[in-house]
Length: 453
Image 1 (cartoon, helix red, strand yellow):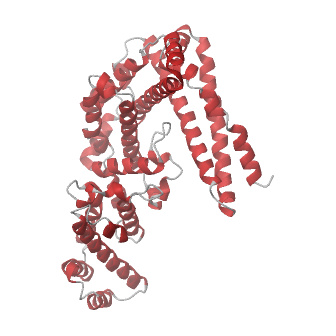
Image 2 (cartoon, rainbow, N blue to C red; image 1 turned 90 degrees about the vertical axis):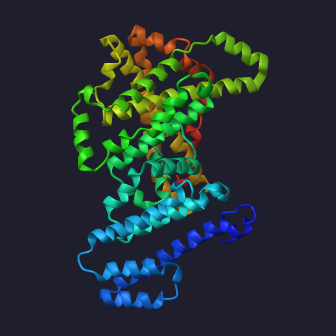
């Protein structure tokens, strides 16, 4: 609590915030004691008697304790038990979800050296405690990720802590994801889909914002707002019977059955990609501008081209995500000829291959740097993972290069690939090959040296 005291004059809500945390800590302490007594195989009545006696002076949570003990003593109370802990879970989540929570005004100022936010660390730690100790079951744990506000905030927090990467489609693909909460390994496909959706939306927002699309693309604000406000991702991944029937209807492969909001988002993302992809610029003008304005101008040009390419890639990741999971034939509503469909599918395959390669590069490189800062046995334990990541990286590079070679086989594909568009500029000007492939030799030396070879 030392951090709280040192900041008390700066934050008028601090005393209220401290009180909220202290109450939650007291409640968790009671639950820990309850679990220890249960592990000792004491009779439930004896458990409640001991807790009442020991916690009789905890006046702040007296009513809460009494309610908990009444549930333990009463027969056939599963529904009441679930309701009680669902309410407690909501209380914990409220620290990061409720806009009127006093923590919201200063949580970012408590960033530690590892970029974690103590409020989030506290929330995730106690969600893990409730789940691992059986106070909530797997279904109830997974249901947390069907809370739209919570998942949006979690994705932002994870991106803030792990670092924004341009390749991976979801924060859960990062090698450090389970460090937040090892219970995340028990998430199911539906929960992962929700994480992927909001991770991609965040990436599109971030890259588009860096490119100034809020100023240059008229529909940008509306599109990004819709992506966050639409509920179809929650409805289509719900375990609720009403929504599961709707999901079966969507998966019938008939585009007319797809939710209007989904079709609208899909069409908007395709349209936005076409806008970016069709933006032409004269290469000679770029080179002239670089020579005239020096290194800063060149760096800015390279950064913009890189961001445009990664934004295009993120859009195709979003398109592919919707097609694979919810709307398999939706593209047929937007293309009119077999030639258009063939071209679209090549662009998608190319961009997705590029995204896999980029993700593999970023994750391998970041894990490598992480290992380099460790010592002794800790490095050895991580080497097998690093070797596997390096092998997968080679596979993704080979796949990507094969798609590049394929451009020679079709005139229209070749024209798209080599025309003066964002992608071509990126390859010519961003020093892609130098920055992405140059560290292979150094990485190999690190693995060999650390392996004692």
